[in-house]
Image (spheres, rainbow, N blue to C red):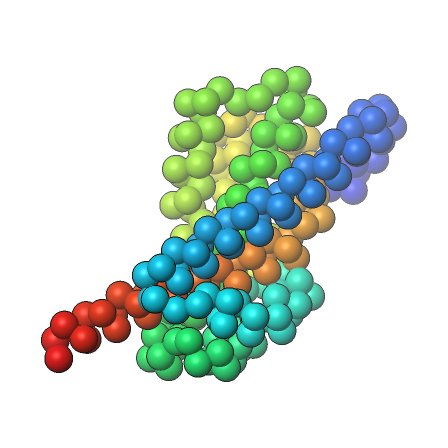
Length: 215
């Protein structure tokens, strides 16, 4: 289905003309991933009163594994080992937060999808969705992403209903969305996995503070 859709677009000449735009958007998305991770780890460091780089630098194997598997679930054992290796997190917090994050925290995928639906809308339909429509889509996407599976393309597949109903994409738009999303799904997954460490760091700071008050 995706192949024939792309063949049609290539025959019409529309996809070849717009390919540089998609490549630029992929670069913008990757930059967005690193900006968001920087914000998360800055917050994590402030809440936990620790240097977030101590945890972040241990996440290299998890990042590369996520790039290779495109699956938060498949990367979970490596991510858990990386989180514990840094000694920045209590084992109880790591054992709870990292597996939970692999299931419900898909920040990289959500960020990517928002950029790409706007790009596909502009390329295929000649206009961007209205601000109100995008706000509704982002809110619903955040809810749908919680229930999305941590597998390749899980977020975009779980949100196909709102892509068609809220944004009004037809079969061609959905096919293009699926394909473009797959181009960078590796890096979106890597952002998801590394972001889990920042959330664990925040939880670690909160619960350590609670323990100190009880003592």
